[in-house]
Amino acid sequence: MMRGIQDPTRLVPLAFLAVVLVGTLLLMLPVARAGPGSAPLLTALFTATSAACVTGLIVVDTGSYWSPFGQVVILFLFQLGGFGIMTSATLLGMLISRRMRFRRRLIAQAETRSLALGDVTGILRLILRATLVVEAVTAAILILHLHLNHGERWGEAAWHGLFHAISAFNNAGFSTYRDSLMGFVADPVMLLSIMLAAVIGGLGFPVLFELRHELRHPASWSIHTKITLAGTATLLVGGTVLMALYEWGNPATLGRLEPLDRLVNALLLSVMTRSTGFNSVEIGMLQPESLLASYGLMLIGGGSASTAGGIKVTTFVLLCLMARAEIRGQTDTTAFNRRISAHAQRQAVTVALFALLAVGIGTLLLLSATELPLRDALFEVISAAATVGLSTGVTAELTPSGQLLITALMFTGRVGTVTLATALALREHKVPFRYPEERPIIG
Image 1 (cartoon, rainbow, N blue to C red):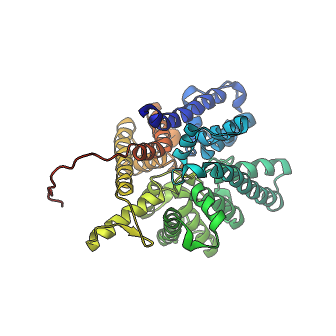
Image 2: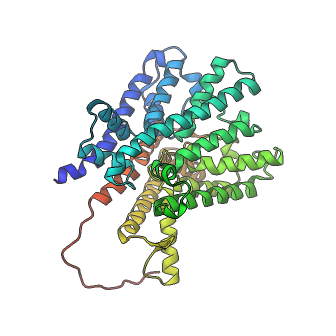
Image 3: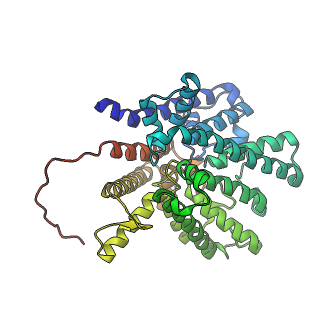
């Protein structure tokens, strides 16, 4: 019985690990590299992990270092990573056997944990449909735009458009351009198209599933959907305001642009720091205040069961609601006229605490393994642990031990939150007794 309960928390990391290892082997093939010879093991491992964990950190330029075959492998890896390894396995099982056993439903629910078991079949169909539709529409817009307005040949525009569409929806942050989106800093069509795909992918499939059925009836939305949408909107607006406030006059970032382009790029910074990882300005040139805001936005991430990383929007909002209730002296934590369960509150605290511990320990180890200043080391660690993919420009300069550490953080950041939250949910049980209550001094 216990073995069956624990299976999802074991199979999810093992599935990701298997994909990373296969991707590493494929990227080490001579045909995967544009230049002579094959890629070193550490370079292939780092890239495969970053792609499978939809992070986007790179130690070599994707467009020039990897051959077309290597780029296809990378695209395939972050498509699998964003789609969810266990989701893909369940879909394959459905296609083969035309039925789902309880164990497979439970594994799928580890990624779509806000849904009941009876909803898993529907969410799997939505995942496939939403993925293909959003990626196809985004790719079509980008392909036409790159060909008509940037003079790229049809074949070149098709590859760049498709690659960036899939990368955006999966919040992967990989780009075939050497400078990511910096060449499109004054191109709102390109930037807004990629942003929209990233935001949709970062909402989470449970939210998309509910919006598809109840779009015109917001009163019937679940508390999860309401919190995710409200939290996402607040973070997008707040992040944009902060980035515009501190970067508007910075000549190294937004200060050299026209007012409309400054606003679009401030919005892009707000979106991309919450997991997507593309950049249209040089991140290392951001003001200290903007970097500090980025730390918080990266750590929060996107929606639960989405292609985004971080501790998730619902976790952050729930922590804020708990603090509000405590300040008001209320015994219950509520949102949208609903009471939040004590177990969900404990989950949020645990997930956030583990994330902070991972960032703290990771930063300490990276500082010990490299000569990076604290601001760069902290940014790199949060970006890896929250699977964001942004960097101040130091990733390629990391020592081998530093690269291994970032690789481990990317892996644990992708599977850790899902695994931890699932394990906590599955292990819930009532103790048949209670100890006497006593209050320690707080503060």
